[in-house]
Length: 219
Image 1 (tube, one colour):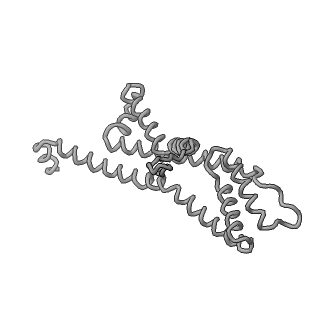
Image 2 (cartoon, helix red, strand yellow; image 1 turned 45 degrees about the horizontal axis):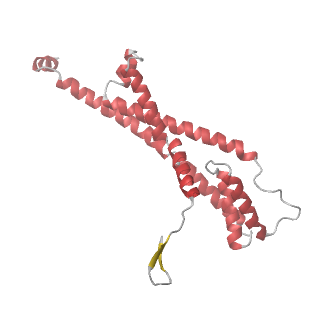
Image 3 (cartoon, rainbow, N blue to C red; image 1 turned 135 degrees about the horizontal axis):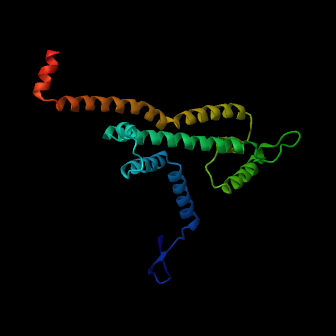
């Protein structure tokens, strides 16, 4: 939105139209993030599991005792479901990327190679193909896009091999970082279990009467 002046000197307002596609793409991106959120799916699984217990569907004494007998156990079960959801989402993403490895993304390389100036057209063709997928970019798609971007910016492919090695290391670090939530769950669940044990022992001692404590000290 801007302010201009008419021929009579009276300020007039000009409105710049905002493309509706931008709002739709933002909504689609937000929806994709939510659907791929381990916390969302883990919370839903935890809610359903404890709902079955409190509604009386699950009545096994051992399940209720060791999974819903204390607030620490609620936290541990919820964290387990979050980690489980994260691994399932990663497995689905890995399968999606493996299926798309054999897809033809670019035209076949002609005999004698290609001129670096063709990289602009190849990048545009790659963008058109990615726009129709409606799913997050795979490691291969991102690798091709960044490699073509280097050739477009520099106008040469002399340093492409070194850049591909750098991109490979970067993707390896990114893949390792994506398991941060799972590593946190693996680290935190034993801590919560130890905390629950300490709280249980403390509660048991607090419930003992002085006579019982004297008998224990005599033993």
